[in-house]
Image 1 (cartoon, rainbow, N blue to C red):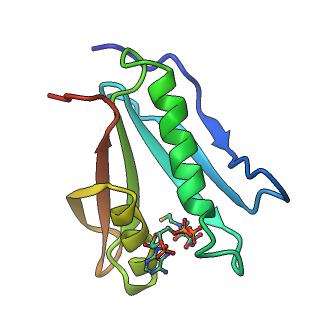
Image 2 (image 1 turned 180 degrees about the horizontal axis):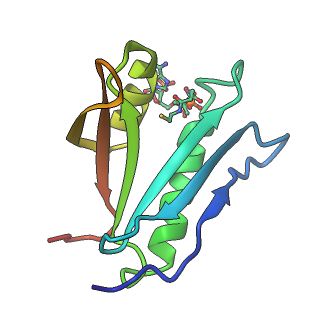
Length: 125
Ligand SMILES: CC(C)(COP(=O)(O)OP(=O)(O)OC[C@H]1O[C@@H](n2cnc3c(N)ncnc32)[C@H](O)[C@@H]1OP(=O)(O)O)[C@@H](O)C(=O)NCCC(=O)NCCS
């Protein structure tokens, strides 16, 4: 198994103008094969639905793809099954992630963890 060669990073969108009202943490998954996890993506309330989240995800994907298949082959994101995370689930669906794992009660009583997945390589096997 190849190991990701890049460290955990705090991601920042780079809009052409203005401040960067968003943040997130990108981290290689331990014990996985070149899988990266984008955590804590958050856009400043009041700036939602202005394309900032989309910009962050695109920049993260571009950066990981640019680092090569030997470093990154899958990007995952995690949400919960709660109604509060409905927007995040819709957002990630729109970004092209497939929901493909559910861990029951991971986030608390009645709140499952939803893991969504996206390939970073043309023909992942
Ligand atoms: C989820 C989050 C990061 C999305 O960021 P954003 O900048 O508002 O999203 P964008 O403007 O880039 O949205 C892109 C698309 O995602 C979908 N989307 C985003 N927010 C949505 C919502 N509340 N309901 C339904 N669809 C939504 C839409 O299709 C949207 O495109 P459109 O606005 O042209 O219809 C933001 O809502 C947020 O910070 N939420 C709180 C923290 C959080 O839940 N983070 C996720 C980690 S679990």
